[in-house]
Image (tube, rainbow, N blue to C red; front, side, top):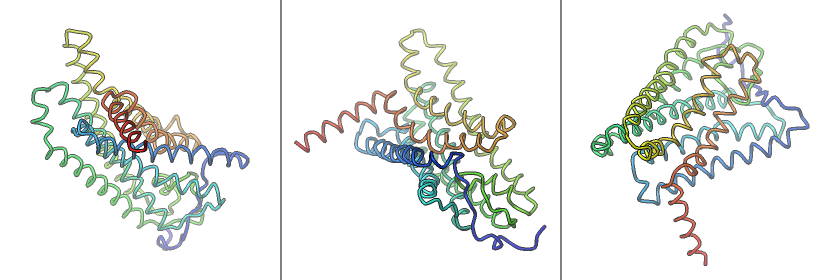
Amino acid sequence: MRPENQSSVSHFLLRGLPIRPEQQGAFFALFLAMYLTTVLGNLLLILLIRLDARLHTPMYFFLSHLACSDISLSSVTVPKMLVNMQTQDQSIPYAGCVTQMFFFIVFTVLDNFLLTSMAYDRYVAICHPLHYMTIMREGLCILLVTGSWLLSCASALSHTLLLTQLSFCDDNTIPHFFCDLGVLLKLSCSDTSLNDLVIFTLGLAGITLPLICILISYGRIGVTILKVPSTKGICKALSTCGSHLTVVSVYYGTIIWLYIFPSSNTSSDNNIIASVMYTVVTPMLNPFIYSLRNRDMKGALEKLINRATVLFQ
């Protein structure tokens, strides 16, 4: 192990997306459009939930925090990637890299916990409809969101503090478009066995357990739906959780493909593509999924458009 500490590396080089130089302009425009769509779409989602009294329910309370988390998750990685593509300057300071990694972990883990809270909300709404308002009271909703933020920050802080104790070799090139924890550990000259253990432990708590809770919730929902005698009742029950189930499928499908079955993703290019899916594509799609598949959201949007039309006439 080298005696130097982290000060032996003052900066890293982000290799970025695996694209040819002549494609930089087209991909810059594409990702800029996707980022703006993500920010504006999720801000609109938050605005609709804030303005429409019909959306002041636990489900939309969680959704507003998920929209905020999605904006933040994209903002942690995409602007820096766009700047690098435009200026051809791939460097990022050591402190900036560690900071980016910290906030990336915060909002990634936060998404997991918020999706789990939303699954629990759907479970209570469908399986215990008569006790829904009693169980999903305001205090519990605030507790779930606060706990999600605290656990996410604690997880990210643990990884960050351990990373700052490592030494780094002369090779400071990161084959990614952001400072990913797994890639940084591969660049280290130090023993990373403790880091790997913490990744496994916190990954189990922050990804696997929430996924298990979501699967159990939807398993119970499925059993309840099968007991509904009418087809109309089944359709109504499915419509209340269809949007959330779609988001969960896209989000966790990508994470499972990337982290749980890594043998099929030995290429770093495949890892980058998968990372783009859950850091750029999924946050962009969430507002469309919840708006197009949700009658309440479409009603709130029409109400906002009508109000704006009257205002500007």
